[in-house]
Image 1 (spheres, rainbow, N blue to C red):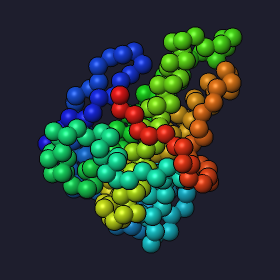
Image 2 (image 1 turned 180 degrees about the vertical axis):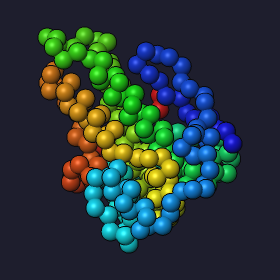
Image 3 (image 1 turned 90 degrees about the vertical axis):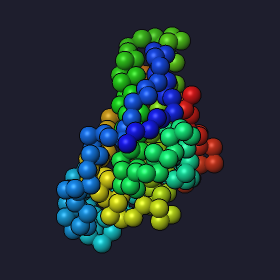
Image 4 (image 1 turned 120 degrees about the horizontal axis):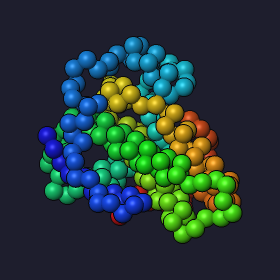
Amino acid sequence: MTYELDSTPTADGSQARDESHADHDHDESDAGCTTEHSAAGSSLEESLGVTIPDDHVGAFVAQAFEDVERSTEWPEAVDAVVADDARDAWRSLSTRKQVVELLTIADEFDEQATALLEEIPLDRGGLDDDRRERFEEAKRLRRNADILRDGIAAGYAEGRVSDDELVAAVEAFEFDTAAIAEREDALDAVANAYDLEFRPYGGTLMTEREPDDDAEEFEAW
């Protein structure tokens, strides 16, 4: 099953990918995925870095994705990355596979953001236009990743994604908060070096903040 995603630019201006994520390696088969909460808890605790009660695995996983500065809804996250002509293919995927797809895209955004930030030297007197553009692009990619994960949390809260589906998707994808921490460290280093402003990460595993009415929207230009 294949479908096309909305375009996502990179800092070097290259064309957006048209490749499908529907047959991603993380998502080849439903077989073998652990859905028993007692078994899932131990492996997820390692990736999320928290102790998870056996009876609340799904809720804890959803909390890891929630951004309290945002109020993203599941359809908003889907609309942001699935093209109109790909909706039938998207709907044919299981909910577990849909969550894996969103996690995969969010992870790619994180990796691109971190790579852009790490390319910016920290020992210059200031930022030229090119480096400033890289910083802004990294913030856009970061924002998009957080919105997608927040949408997954909303899908769970709305009952669109069940406990077993969410846990199975996260285990299949092998989600790890270390990637987010690496991104935030890179962002903080550049911002501190050049006295730049950015919105602190709103994930509930890293901070406790009230929702922000001014939180930016997903940008897929």
